[in-house]
Length: 278
Ligand code: PDD
Image (cartoon, rainbow, N blue to C red):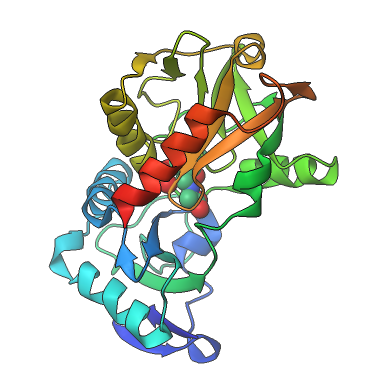
């Protein structure tokens, strides 16, 4: 597999990053995951805009437009013959002796790799996910896409260890997000309820696209927090992310959603999203 590190394409085995990289020592790094379908990058520009915002929020002094990120994504795709999967991009503040004080003027470390994955024909999407809920103990700036992913990773592991598929995290009684996805529900009278944008959640690129398609399809959108009980009583529930697309959720803490099977509206939204992303 060919990866990209700090200006060079090279085999993954010979790529390296300093042990003093602040991404490694402090999680002082931001990232993006862009899906590839039929060799095409999905929503590339929206991901780059969010990357710029994340860098700005952390005060990492790097203009992503100063390098040809689109060209690098395409370069990796072509070198790896990637038809379907993802491209991961990470930018850290750079390399310096370990210090809680963030040094100025570092050269950021930039790395990208690709992963071939079947995204469209997904057994999970056919089956639907069982999620459990856990208190959201992440920090209060979940809108910044940093590499500090320990808590959601622990919670996902706990979910899978207990026979479920993922976790929905809960803050003050209302659902924030999945471990790596936005969370949404549909009511019996055709309203799509999703938490509004704030520091509480990542501003999902897939979320934004799906809300547009749902609106076009005649669903009424309500952007507000919802409780676990409300989600359990919903007609359908689903998660969105760059790699899961629109992923049905069929149970929450063991309580079936609707009849416990993948619902019609979510199935339709998933097809619509895939169709528009090709
Ligand atoms: N995660 N919320 C969280 C906490 C996420 O990590 C992600 C994406 C999303 C969905 O955002 P988007 O639709 O822009 O992918 C929401 C990526 C896929 C990951 O970490 O692999």
